[in-house]
Image (tube, helix red, strand yellow):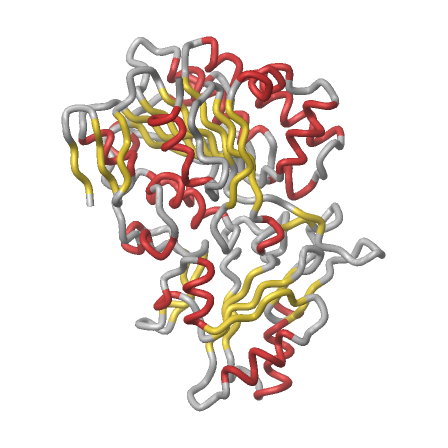
Length: 412
């Protein structure tokens, strides 16, 4: 699925020009567009304010489910999950009858543009906040690939680099901190300032701040002020920068500020009998303190003989549910691999989330009203380029996985 000519690289059916200037693609985890609007309005992002006036500013759609793994892999492959296969952070593996994280590259069904660029002779670097993404993003790639979470463990053999903590000049931050994302940006600046600076760099942050702080709040503005400073430094180094997000973020609470949760496993146990159906929450990952594994997307596996159509209609009638689809309809509408989702896919409304059983969600660590993602309500994301462009189709449906197309093919 990869082909290279003298200056054109074809990956997963899309053509990309090889870079002539350093290219940095940034995935800001959980970046609802209003975060940027509010930070700019409050004077926290002077560099980006200039880019919004002089560069290319689009609003794009992320892939559904609007979670981290599916979208980061879409960005680096240029295609939706129906092609690359990563349809959540977590899935039910029917073959082994186990629920597993989708962190292993064995789940990936398409090559990444990053690996193809490295094979074409370009130097490539990847820095991600959490280690859960590292092996997927770096699969088959010759170059530098490490996480902020485990920066002190980086080796030449495993990550293409060592001495990361000394290079960056920051201690390894807590995984539950804004500093984890700052480490990503600081590392990017240090790598780009090196004598062997990369031709292409991919930076991916964590949404810890966005889960806790709404747009325009002091905590959010401080994060975007930090980010703006580092992006300005990369811009000053001559980098073409494309900025997008893996998903947006919304409050998921009732008016009393308590989480508005549809405990779907409890509901189905009541309807069908305990354990007859299996509810899978693809938001699940090792880092659930800030969201309690509650998101707006779930997939349901049903026992043989169940009337899936009738049950889907019944689920759709639940308060707070937005869309309930069959496997085939969900695969088509959301561009998902049909063999990796359940018999039914359920998506909740903007202010609601879906859980399994109430007894299985520990929300005691939530120290702020729940904010989360996963649904269509978190699909709109920024797509910004620090260069002007000409001839872009105003009717085109832009996607976050068009970021490399913008940076490599459209920048002037």
